[in-house]
Image (cartoon, rainbow, N blue to C red; front, top):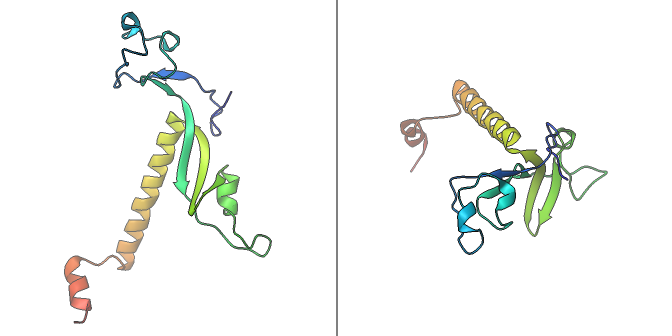
Length: 135
């Protein structure tokens, strides 16, 4: 059984009532049933509580690892590296609540960086950019 790497909640099946059952898979009598065990394993209403969260990754090249590795901060947070052809991804197994917290944290960090840029004057308006460029 897989658990959330952050809050240690065990994985379980959850019903997503935005989706509809496929009649060929589920019994029409159980289509409105809220018990996940009464639905087929391939039913679109069934979702897992714990799933893999993937984000783009940047590698740090060090003498010990010239091919590159994740930063110590990311490894300390529990992120793992996944190489898929030319794509580099970092991933963790998280529950939906922790995924929402992670997305909120990332959003706040983006807003913080944008505010810092604006205070330093590195975020010019469109008119300022046109005045700086030379044709």
